[in-house]
Length: 316
Length: 316
Image 1: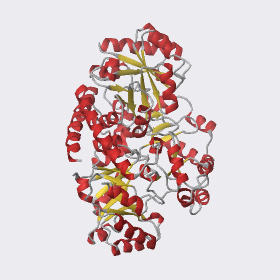
Image 2 (image 1 turned 180 degrees about the horizontal axis):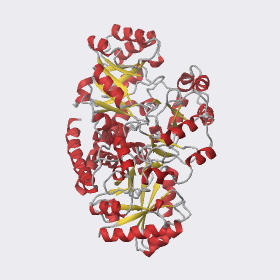
Image 3 (image 1 turned 90 degrees about the vertical axis):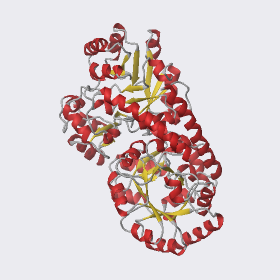
Image 4 (image 1 turned 90 degrees about the horizontal axis):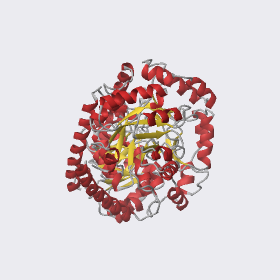
């Protein structure tokens, strides 16, 4: 047990990213059953859909699981009500101000972790009383920080200024990367892309196929004038690229994005016109696997890396 | 000894980046004397200046050192002649096609390492017969790859497809980061920013002060329509940002850059109008130190990290 596994009551300090359109009860319960911490991604769910997923998740696992809660949506308070009603004990908050709900959630016995991408928000979240921080690097899929600080630089940067447990996110899909993140000062890791492509992910099969095909240079951080988001190359990506190259402003980008594009791509499988959010590490993922295999291989790779590094330290 | 330290005949697998305007004989010999591999950066030197630096470096150290050689400059062949004349035994090539000079250099008994930022050029360099690869991630200062792949993702990506010794570059200024890079599959590391700010670096004092002041978000990859380059924020940076935001094309960016801007900023100390090339890890560098202290602290941190990870593996 380390600080992260004991905080959440799980076997391994591996947390599944609560990604939109990927992270329903099937994925979350599979990760929790495999020894990690599963998270239901409420960002793409209406409150009653979230309730249904929480109930199904409780049926599917007797292990701890949590809910990922974006703080900027109009439905955030309804989601919180569902979380309280259903007795969820772990909440990962993101995309918003942690000082708004952290105290309230903690008064209700909920363990709260918050996602940050820079020093300023890390300190703000600690001040708000969160139990752990997720430090999300430039490599991560979906929405990223404006600073573009990578996991390699961000992890020790935040470790230097805060004492609470840290979870590194972005670029982590192997035991090697998990080992590296912990060497840099993390107590655990959050894994998104590798679970997005798992058999239990609710993402569309065509989107999963695109992730498996991805190579170096297949994703890029776009929409920096709006909110930076890492996207997989497709026709929509090319349209955004063309617009950005000629200096399109916030409004034009917003109109180009429109409504429901992530659902179209990630859930409905329109891999050309849809918005496909995935991490840079997609270039290292070459297969769709069941969650248990992903977790087991990650832990085996972690221990192999540890053995290899013991040899290396002797040589150096 | 490991594969990198034995290839270059040095004590530690730490290679100093051969950075323009920073890496003269004083820096290179100090790094070699401290147990790493020092490199003279020929990119900002006329051939006769390079000759002078090589001669002074030989006087200042009896340890191995090398020259960094950009392959795209008009003076590359004159530089090569100087390297041969002066009997330099190690060359790091960058910014160009490795198939052009690698065989020739190796025929003259020179060990050749080449810098890459993607899979395609990694394979090309191996085919050209280089002895080692530097895999340079998005975090690195100065010119970077178009793919924006970070050190955390790029290192295992290249490790998977090549067998020759690998050196990770970008984001590495501590023993923790060195340990992480080796966990990801590197045999050694190249350190730029930390040495750019060292006492022995020939960079202007005002530039060094700006690096020490840098925090998260202080650098950014710019000029992507030309050649991507990571710059430190200043007035020139703001001008580039403004031009890029309104869609400035290659020609306009090239005109804005003009000639001699890096020299102006990095060597002459005009930290507002000059081009300041530095890595993202500048945000973690808070002091100007002598090279020996940098190397010693890095190795001490490497071993502390190794001890810490032995504890962590037992907990997990």
